[in-house]
Length: 169
Image (cartoon, rainbow, N blue to C red):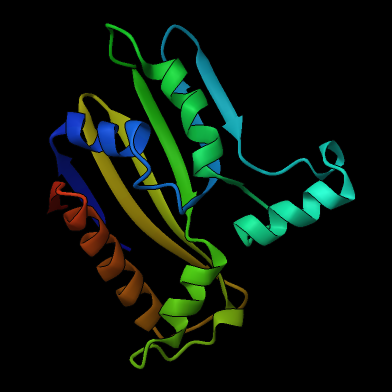
């Protein structure tokens, strides 16, 4: 786990809300506080979809649990846009299954993809600062920390690739 404070709030907000840079992630939740607190649960409600639509979603998202950030992003943007900055927001993003498989396939990784439940990126805005915190979950207890190390490095590289400056906390 690593905590990174983003320098340049506007830059991360643009990357998160106005571009497709985070669209490969899955959204577990978004909580946005402006004049009210809006809670978006990213869990797919399977009863909403026909079996064909659900199969198509699973094939396109590679997930049958969470919505794609690209589907949630416009709603979040509508809630945040305006002349006033939000009081706070929190977005919980998950690596898509194919990214988990790529990380597990790395030569320096000692953990099978089937044991990795989630690789998470928490993005939080509060008191004028944006903090990104990584996390991981496994299906069983694992002493090997190679997955966390690779995930932390991936997130640092991703943020740098987006042109975002950050400082480790």
